[in-house]
Length: 240
Ligand SMILES: [Zn+2]
Image (spheres, protein in one colour):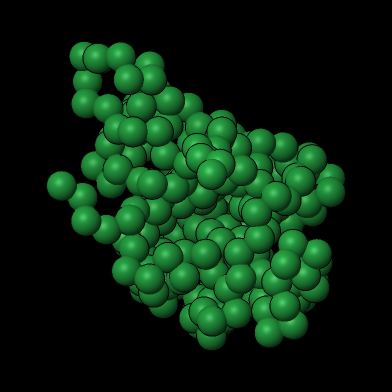
């Protein structure tokens, strides 16, 4: 029987999970939960900016840098790191890879899955990762309680983490997570991603801005850093 809460994060590129959900992951593991980051690619072509400034750079060297950075970031957040190395720009997810993601869901039995938002007009890979993560969830669940020929899991909650340009990705945050207590841990994870150092400031400011906004949802001024999510699955709730 499962004794720990489980979270799986599906990241298109090696660093996406750090900027957009690092606080939620750190909070989850700090509270005794188990977290698994599945990175579909290393982001070696499209999201390794600083590494490509080096003359004579090669794909293999970039990938091994990104592997080391993402592993260090995952360790900082207390999460397991599973790289699938499917390639990026463009990221393509085959039927076989979909089954691999579904089998990770079945093995980890996540209570919650964090994924990319469904739309992103500036990134060719994020919507592909979002769709694959959603489809794999359906494959892992089977058809809602009906016996299947394969092992199934109870329906995990699924949330989209905040895109880089939320308003242009039809992202409507409805879930605010106070990550003030784990901000040091998230900072450590962000510092591990040296190839995209320019994003550290950006996501620190975003978290401060969301903290201010979340006061309308009841947080007080002690809340300094917040990550925003959009719920993608129906909520099971009992009103008393
Ligand atoms: Zn990305």
